[in-house]
Length: 216
Image (tube, rainbow, N blue to C red):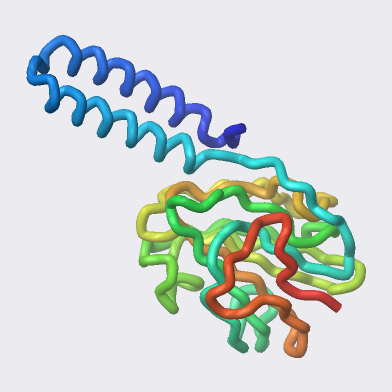
């Protein structure tokens, strides 16, 4: 199953792949070289297809947990100053996504979207310390009845050139459902009140819609 955001790219990539394979088959006569070229073209298509995959995930919906919004590796757990919305110190948990990860963004909690804003910006590598404030990004705050306001931020990386965000202010959202997509390499930051019990460790792999990031 593929994400709807990949529809156009998948169609173009498939069409180009078919055209290139026909051209290679027609013009390249050297057997081994033709095989290598065909495998290279097919490999690129496979990479595009796997990037836009959208596996079905069963989320155990509960207000007592904050779940991972994306697949990836936990690269930051630290107290920082959050300057955009809270304007105070928060506990930040960041998940880095490589190009081979699933790039669907899922709502980490149930609740009402209180804030949703897009920021144009740079394309520093996603793990750069300044990526949270200087890269292209979207900031979303969902108010949950138990956790209060939970902020997550989609951040574009060096390869990501488009962030898709479905959250609109006033929406009621359901934990684990589709919140958007980041195309080609990225990161997502989560911000919690100081003292929140974090359930993940640095270097741990997180699974979007499944891994518990924090709980009451």
